[in-house]
Image (spheres, one colour):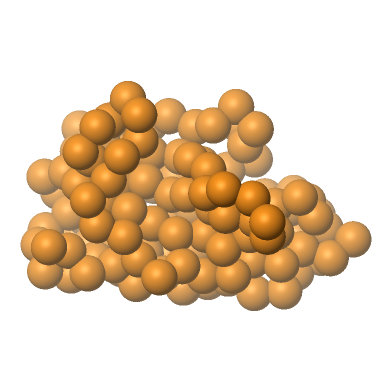
Length: 120
């Protein structure tokens, strides 16, 4: 099992940028894929972005152009850069690791999440 701890969330204004981090421990992150999800109030959790062990990246259509996923193997950390934040980006952002079903965005390990709140 991999322990995942997110950080970097907060209260920001529309148009601001944030970089979320997800520190992984327990196993090296070099050998498996990781992803970001978010859950807005009253809504189901939704996929945001993912990166495979080989570096292939995919984004949800709703975030393309504003979100950037990346990883630092040396630091065992996954990142999510969010630019031009919008109020509708308000959600708890969680990272996940070890894809069970890559195409359906199912992952084995999850962090607790970090809250991002965007004011208009």
